[in-house]
Amino acid sequence: MPGRSEILDAIKDYDSKKYSEEFYNFYLGKISRSVDPGEQLVTDVRHLFHWFLGKVHTSETEAAEVVEVNGIKYYLSGMAPSNTSCIEEAVKKENLWAGLAFKNGNLPIENFLNYARSITRNSIVMPAFFIHIFKPAEYPILNSKVWAAYREELGKSVFINTKPKNIDNYLEYVSYCSYLKRRLGLSLREIDKGLWVLGERLKEIARQQEKGNDGEFEGQIELFTE
Image (tube, rainbow, N blue to C red):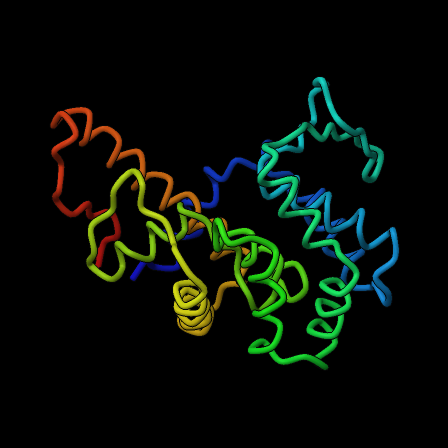
């Protein structure tokens, strides 16, 4: 298991320029105060998905949209059609109503999972993020990087294409992060960022190993210390 100091050290290398914490917290705060699935909530959810996909920039680009948060201009770039379609599903009124009910404790996770999974069948990371934005203190961000860090913890091999595949993977990861919170006394967001960096390092090791072995590498990569 990664130690407290290992996670805190990893956080120092988190790409806060590409994934602005101020932007992220600003829109999470707005969603936490939302009471109806109106146009404002639609916009807030869309902006957070842009952030998750790495499509929010502080330097001027050929942006699809420009927004200002606490006096800072952010440039939101375009994305793949599959991601656009997923976001459009997420911001449908029935899904936003479900998100608000989940946020307020009126819809259990077992029921909300059905709404989250309905936004795309191509990936679990987007439905997981949809869950996260309504209860960020309980449900972590999921991506291939944090999943790689978790697999290493389980003693399983990590490859370039290692990624979570289904909702059971996500719920398994949620339980793991809850355990780390209790064991290490860290916030879920600290764990998010720390595992993100540790998993990114694992992926890079896998990349280098595969290059060095002509794509034949099948060994386990170890990163965490006892």
